[in-house]
Structure formats: C-alpha cells, structure tokens
Length: 550
Image (tube, rainbow, N blue to C red; front, side):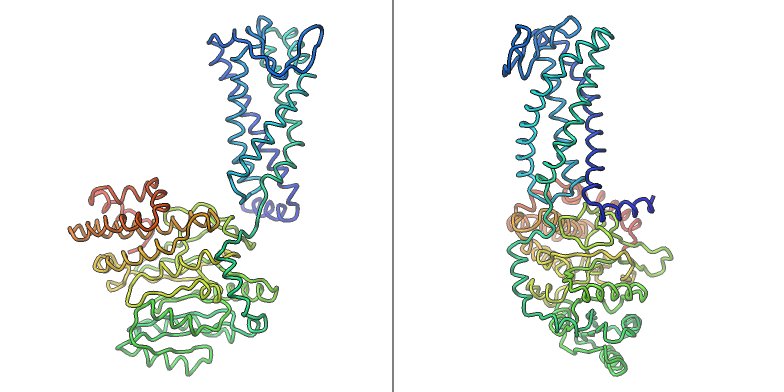
C-alpha cells in the first residue's frame, strides 16, 4: 500500500493534470452512482403524493409534432401510464442533483484540485456554472430523452423507466466530464503561497538578510537554556557537537547555582561551535530571548538542557537545510517528530505528523490537514528560519514557565514555506518529579499557564488576515493550552483554581470572541470546561497512559 502511495505521489507530481482528471473521473462516477441510488428513493417518496398529477412544464423551446416542447418538461401523470411524472418527478430529480452537487463541490475542491481559494467565491461560480450547464444540457437532452424513454418503456414496460433513468444519467455524466473539468480547474484554483499583511511585513524585514550572509552562516543554531543542569547538560551537548561549522550550539546559563556554568565553559573551550552566554536568572523565556538575539545560524531551534537530539536525525535535518540553501530556497519552517522519552518506560510514544503534513515537498498552510487532539506543532517539532522568528516580534516573557507555547505559536502567521521531515529528532525527557510538566508542579504554576494562555489569545490574528487552515490550527493549539489549564484546575479542585479556570475562559471570550465561538463547538473544550472534576480526572489518567506524558 505504501509503495502504491509513493507511486501515485510521483505520478501526481509529474503529471498533475492527468492525475487530477483521473481523480475527477472517479469522484464524478461515484457521484453518478449516488444519484442512481437517490433518484429512485425520492421518486418513490414523491410518487405517493398528488404532485404526480401536477404538471411542471417550463421554458418552451419549440414545437414538435404539433406539441410544445419545454426545456423542463414534466407533464402530469405517472410515466407508467404515459405521463411525465409531474412536479413529483421534477422535485425528485432536482433534490437528487442538489445533494449530489453539494457533495461533489467539496470532493472536487478538496480532493481533486486541493484548492485553497475562497470557499464562498468558488461556491458562487460553481453554482453559476452548474445552472448554465444544466440548462444547456436540458436543451440538449430534448434530442435524446424522449426517444430513449419511449423505446425503453415500449420494450421493457414499466421497468423501462428505471433503465431510461440510468441511460440518461450516464449520457449526462459523460458529457459533463469534458465540460466541467476545465471549468473546475479555473474555479478551484490553487494559490501555493497565500500572503497576508503579516507575510508581506516579514518579506520586507528579511530583505536585508543577504544571500552572501546566508551562505556563510551555520545551517542551524541550537539554543540550550540551562538552569541548574549539571546532571544532564553533558548528555544534551554530546548530541550537538561534531557537525563542524554546520551547527552552532548556544548555551544560555540562566543564573545557575550549581556547576552548570563551569560545564558550559568546558564545552565551549573544547568545541568552537559551542558558545556560552552567562546571565542573571530570567527564566526559560529570558534564556531563549538571549539565545535568539545571539544566533547566527540560518535556522534556529531550542533544545532544553535535559533533552537531546538523535544524531542520525540531526544529520538528515542538516542535509535538508543544506539542500535548501544551495537551491536558493527560503525554507521558513522544518517540522520533525519528537519522542516522549519517559524515564523508566521502554516503549516511547512518538508524535508524528504523517496524517497532517505532506512529505517530500515544500508546501504552505493551505496544505495542512486536520490534527488529532494529541497533535500540535510543539516547540520540540520546530526548526524555524531565524529571521522569520525575529520578524514575528517574538519576545518571551521572563520568569514565566510554559512560554514554549508562545514560541511555537506567535511566529506561525509569518511562515509561508514548510517542509516535513519524517524523522524522530527530538527526545523530550519526562518523568522527573521536579519538571515543569509534572502534574503537581503544573498545578502550583497554574497562574503562569493562565498568563501564557492570555498571551496566546492576544497573539491570535483575525481570521481574515491569515490562511483559513492556519487560523483553525492556531485555534486548535489555543484549545490545547486552555484545556490543559482547565484540567489542572479540575485536578487541583480548590475553589481558587476552579475560579481561575472560569476566568481563563471569560478572558479568552473578551479578547477574541471569534476564537471562543469556534471553541464552543468543540467537544473536548466543552467537556473539560463543564464536566465534573471526577470525569476530567478519569479522562486525564487515560490520556496520560495512552500518550505517555507524566
């Protein structure tokens, strides 16, 4: 199956129009089959009403054998007795067509042509095209409809009506294949890079980043925020050296009180690619700010001092970044997988994006597919172009935990070009009792989670300013943080934390009602907001066991 999928992707890349026509043909035939199923059902439904005896004859187009010929010609009376089915048959046909065409619209837009054009505009022109072509087809149908029905019913009797339905519908479908396909290619256009005011600003800010500077810079800067990390800093840095001038590691010693500063300096003395920044304690956000300001690599990512990178995957990342640089392409975002490397657990949960992101090509937000509840572009998954992050104006709040949510949220509207490399790069070490993601620790810092949630809500751009799929993803990510806040408050169960939970949702509604209107329709958000603490605790335990966190 995978081999077939790879073959089809290659074929689709090389023969785009042919591939589109094949998919269009298959879907169109599927819609035709659906019509063949629905039409008899609606005919039977309306056939038991007096609408059969109500004539519907509209738009006369001429005279034949002394009788007026109508574009829509449904005389009163059942077809079995020589009538035309009347208004009952007309309604059966039109309702069948309406249902089929609504399904066809979304199938052709999203599957065949993978369009990112405006749904409303596409729907308008689709309707116009459909009405015009339907009228033209009805006029053409005058030439063959009556002879087919007359012959079929004379040969087959009452059963000939169904046979004539099928033959007529097949003829109509065959004609429509060649008429609709070129029209659909225009209606369902594809804009590979939908720019917004934000991406335009981003482009202006990047203009000074010359090609010469880019070619001489490290491919990747890895920022390592470190606070009291003497027990595990060596492990992290071991995975970040040995790549020559391709990878720059910046250790930000954030006012550590143990041997972290000494260890960092030792690594910098041994490896020219390792740099150290010593600063007073400013928290994780302050450390990332310092590292980002000092970064010289074309791309940047953050590796927490208790985590590490897989060396084979790192080489694959550097290879792709080098390939993009040599080709003169500006890759804004590279997405890779990350592993929940839980202490004491032999089977590690891996977060991958195979169902969400295309592989093997550069794409934009319009190509983003729906994420599962456990999928979001966490900081551990992101390697971003350094100048894009800077252009976004990202400044992480100091002395605040959980700011990695902001790091993986604020720059997104400034990103245009994306690649997904399906490698397990980042090992996210969890299981220590003192970690910020530990349940008990998170509860004590719930106020900081709430502040980060508010900052994310303020950073969410209006829907009209960004690609629609990006906006929906950002709401999805915002939901994750709001859900985490709510769950932690429910796990605590104190009146103060339960009140804070309500305040979080009220603040979101005040700042960005557009987003909260969408969240009101979400099952998970509604459950954690309104369910009892007992139900939430049970759901949390199940999720933790399945996903491997905490």
